[in-house]
Image (cartoon, rainbow, N blue to C red; front, top):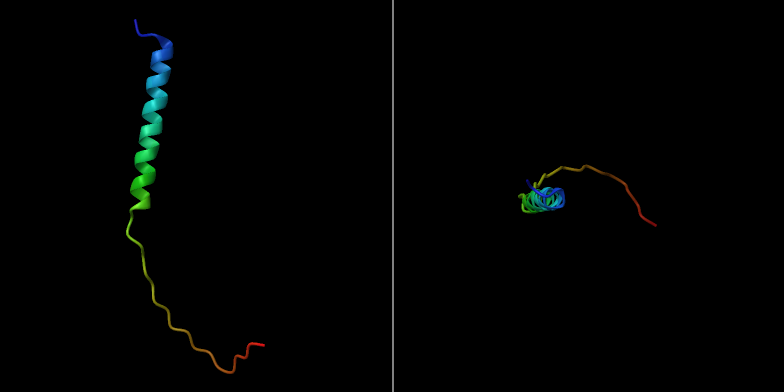
Length: 46
């Protein structure tokens, strides 16, 4: 029979490994660029 402490350690380690993999995949996603056109007139900054 499998020791419950070993099973808890395996499950928690597996969960942490999956979370790390998911976070690194989202970090390497390609950036999205959008271009907008802005029209302004008579704006003065003081």
